[in-house]
Image (tube, rainbow, N blue to C red):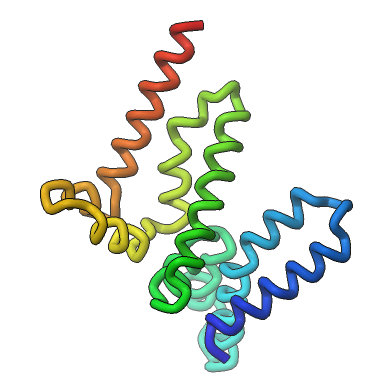
Length: 171
């Protein structure tokens, strides 16, 4: 079974479970639904590695990191696949919105400038996403996607920091 089929099965299962228990733990179910592709891919990789006889430390270091870095498997398998490319970018956009919204509400908005960096770290650099972004940029802006998009992320953090500074100063 391919990881793409596993993604579809787990997402459909999570949608079914969410519909059954829609009123209870609604926010938790939304987060589980959004993280199910990456956790499904990670569990599949851990299972295949253990069947192949890899040692436990190798499985934990190489295959189980998707449980923490929840955007990395989405970038690696979903965004990189031409048939699921838009699905992966939509999932990453939803996660970016969730991270930005949560950052805006915590610590009175002081965490907001770090939200692009949090998004980038949870995706372990998001190399496939930034390859897609690089294709959309004009030639003179391609330097923003160097080092897996780190200059673009730092520029977004600085812009959000300046926005928050001006907003706090105005109050």
